[in-house]
Length: 192
View 1 (cartoon, one colour):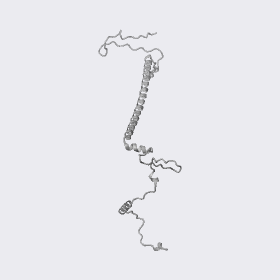
View 2 (cartoon, rainbow, N blue to C red; view 1 turned 45 degrees about the vertical axis):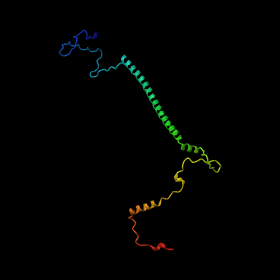
View 3 (cartoon, one colour; view 1 turned 90 degrees about the horizontal axis):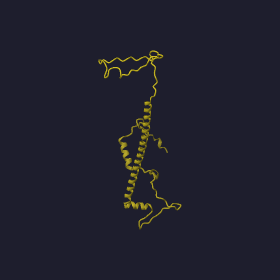
View 4 (spheres, rainbow, N blue to C red; view 1 turned 135 degrees about the vertical axis):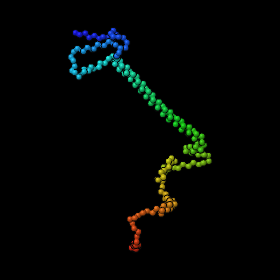
């Protein structure tokens, strides 16, 4: 049984740098492995075995991924909450500006009078009239105007629009090359 010795580089050979021109001792050739020899051209592939270092590395990477994932999730959640709060602040500021505008309107005496009239109040010395329908119920004032197309008949265009259209037509008469002018006046249409 042959001995399989590993030689240490500490004990044999010179110390320091070795290389061409340094005169270092030649290294011994590796001994061939005993056992069946693989066919020529094909080298046996050894499946890499997981080592303890690889397991620790995978464990560290997994712990980092979990911690970063939870941090990223918390960051995204806080970001969405921040966006929602900013939108709420903008909406509140718009509401505040609307209320301030309404307050300024109430400082105008004409606006106060208009609002009081809409509620049915009248100034001293005025008489209020209420229009009733056929059932005796008061009619509410119309809040919206009706569509002008549905109110009444169409208004005919003003005379100057027709006159201007006539001027434009005289300047650019239509061309009709297919109908020649009449050469004879037929008197048969005036029969009684």
